[in-house]
View 1 (cartoon, protein in one colour):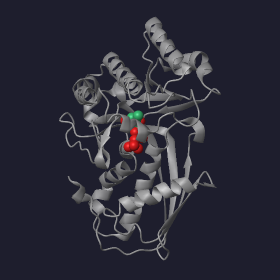
View 2 (view 1 turned 135 degrees about the vertical axis):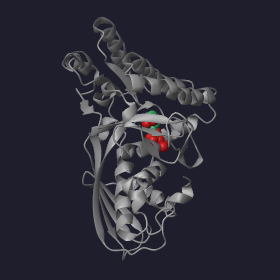
View 3 (view 1 turned 120 degrees about the horizontal axis):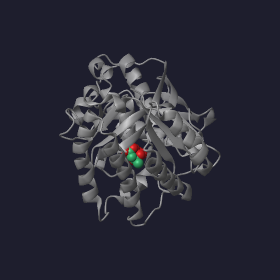
View 4 (view 1 turned 60 degrees about the vertical axis):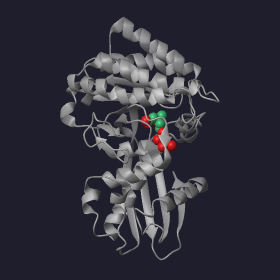
Amino acid sequence: MTNKDFFGSENFQLSTQKVENSCPSNIALIKYWGKYENQIPANPSISYTLNACRTLTEMQFFPDQEFSVSTFLAGKEEKNFASKIEKYFKSIEIYLPWILKGSYKISTVNTFPHSSGIASSASGFGALAKCLMDLDLLFSSDNRQLTTNNQKASFLARLGSGSACRSLYNGLVVWGETPVVEGSSDLYAVKYPDKEIHPIFKNFKDWVLLIHEGEKSVSSTVGHGLMKNHPYSEQRFQEAKDQFVPMKDILKNGYLEKFITLVEHEALTLHAMMMMSEPAFILMKTGTLEVINKIWAFRKETNLSLFFTLDAGANVHLLFPNDNDCAKIENFIMTELLPFTKKGGVMQDEMRF
Ligand code: DP6
């Protein structure tokens, strides 16, 4: 499919509407870090869709008014966010030709704390794209096929924030073209085939340790930008592409140990790339390092499958299978790892299949 396949119809009929949607966040296992023009990823990525960390969005549309957007986050008006959304809506007019023909009131609530450092852009743009597709379904008549299979919502979410396009599907989700995953695309995400996933990877927990609350030291925009003239970017993009080959084998056959090695390597590589960029950024805090060392020692001592991944920030995503050993792991987290968080902050989440 090309961009053209997503162009919207000029035949539409508008009416005042209110739509509501919720969308979860996701956590990448093979990371997206680096992109080209028009939100085309430099390499394919794969993520788990979460369950508890999500954004709820209510969108009201008034067709008899001039184009404008007002946004409310947890009841409080956010003018900066509104101007970002206005820009985003203007950029996707070709795909939704009715989009600038009215005003919007958008109210969103996140289930995770505002200052937690958990990125809300994936769940936020995911929920927004779902609302837009609901309106499109009400206003236009010839897009039912795309709407049903979620592809256009994922396409639109990507144009707001790359990782958001993966939040439109449950389970393991791939964004970016790779020969390893049939139907994969740079333009939207696809579900990783269920029958290719060993049961052990279908019931997983992700507890997010809130090591550092507040603004991230490097925004995604700056981070992706730093990959442009990075001395190791080509090697990094190639490595991420290559990782899909062992990942496929791991997922199919339930090779948990290899999964742990690959996922932790991906997280550390993302951070290493930022340490080697110009200017350099260290995205971990002392607590992040302490937690990583504790996890490695715990794994050595107990042989239990607790491991981590990181986003472009200091918080640690603790991953572990939801099986008979999980009570022991949870007990270790609560007693040994929680002290490294700011205020005992942990988001207890799980993968959604
Ligand atoms: C580290 O999706 O936030 O979470 O496309 O500029 O909005 P933009 O970037 P964004 O980047 C997220 C990168 C990451 C890894 C990942 O989710 O794959």
